[in-house]
Length: 185
Figure (cartoon, rainbow, N blue to C red):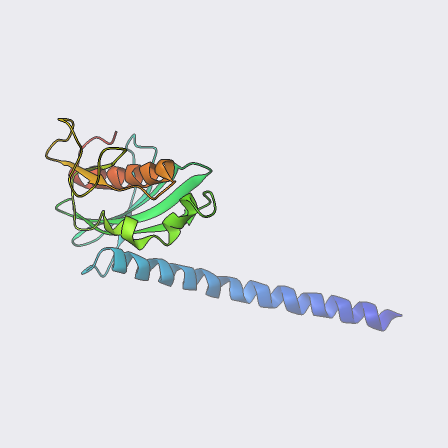
């Protein structure tokens, strides 16, 4: 009767000890992955320093300064839930890379942002204020009418996911505005 109880307690202790020992390994792996991702988003950078953010832009979660720019983590509300992104912006204010780290949007529509590289590529190597083109506009010809300014960059929305597309543009605008010193809208 006592042998099964001792075996169960011993097995629980072994599992607890293993989990405790592997916890630091998992944390190290997560840090290494995050560093590699930031290096990809801001090519040419090797080291990043976390900076405190005291601004008023509620979309900005964290700021990491590098030799040639910043990687900024943003969170904003999409259609169904919050969207978390990492965005690389060089010192000239150009977007060098971006990734949607987390999104729980509508399956088959807004959640396509996780894998829609064509949509995300519209932001790359551009600076300015990004806006999502609506009916009668497209990203290649610019907005119709006189509303476009020299610093506005229009991107085509993900089909059926305009709210999610606009949330992505807000995140990118927040990151670019931080680097250029402009006020985020």
